[in-house]
Length: 511
Image (tube, rainbow, N blue to C red; front, side, top):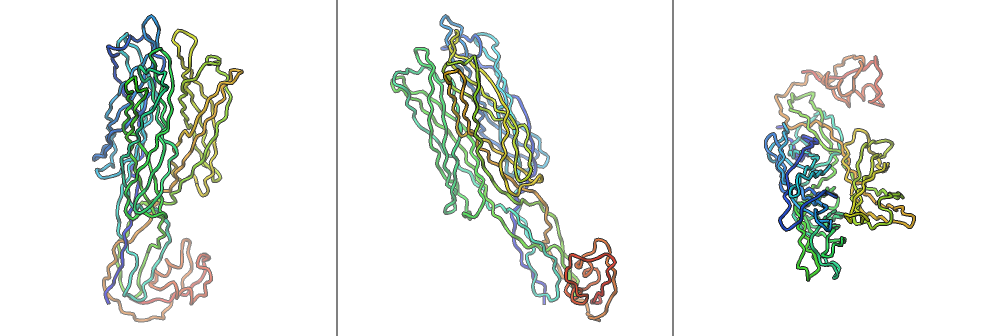
């Protein structure tokens, strides 16, 4: 009877390339005619938005912009504070040898620094240093032999594997928009600074969809006609869904949010409001934990078999853990004293990440940039401080061989100036660690039967002495015997405990 095989498919998600690149984006900004000359820069901030990303053969292309706000001291009799808002557009192309069109690209672009230099009263040079973290994944569907039928006396060596198989990926654009009301006594002149953060992320799998929910934390500093600086904070809900066929609640779902574009537009002065809109791309990738019994080797004592075997890379033990680190500090900053704090830019920087005893240990520093009211001529000033932190997060089963990606989000921040001029600092950071292990497994993708062999003597014996590295399987295959016969004839109780030099009687089938 002809050999029959049953096959199955496996969708592999392999990391093809992972790298970090730093690049510079710079341009000159001209002060609009309606604004006064610039004397010096008080503070500068920016947010990176990625319009487009694509993989070409051997290259990765990123198109985006750095949306910048510059607060400056005006060269006028009043020495008032004004602002500039401009975009630094960029296109960055990175050489990646193994990249091919159709692969999946995951990126994180961080603004490392933003420097502004006054060239003259009407022109400012802006220089941004960006760090691009990129990962390229290849989704490959492979076919493997799951089982063999219609052939007696075939011998199999099986191994059990637990892998993460890709179910599918999807993307959807959602919009968070609102009209924010400001104080009716505030006649707004211009927006001086904006800040957006996505927090409270949550998702639920239902009916072939991933339902997503989050908050867009919005912070806007603005200037009024009577030269007052004020702050408006708001929370705008983000809701939407991503279609992912065949997804179920048992699957692992990675969800990522990227702000693609923002619009901050003051309405008419009489309306006392600011329109805010953010375009957000939500991408999802779903995996299932699959327990596989894979054929690793096979032969038949009575039939000549040929098979093809290859190694493939797979992902294992993909898990996610989250933890909150509460920072509670008290700092004396004489420059601020009891003055009003308009805003604080918080930047956690991880310098070292180590894995030990089922824990991930993060060591780094917290950088704080205070923007506050000043008693001097400018009316506003900045002060930057930093201090170290160390945070340990429990993660059972994690090892030094695990690949770990960590996302740090600022969940909340609060800064209160006390009567003794100390500043009570309260910051809650959410650490999300995604762990996985890349390994290789062997699959058999084709088996062919050559010819039937005559069985001349079923009970002939060979005496064999165990050598280093021997297993019952290797011995059985070498002498065209079976594992069951060797165990039965020699009364072997533990196949993992063969002693070197041990004498074995090997029943064999003759070719």
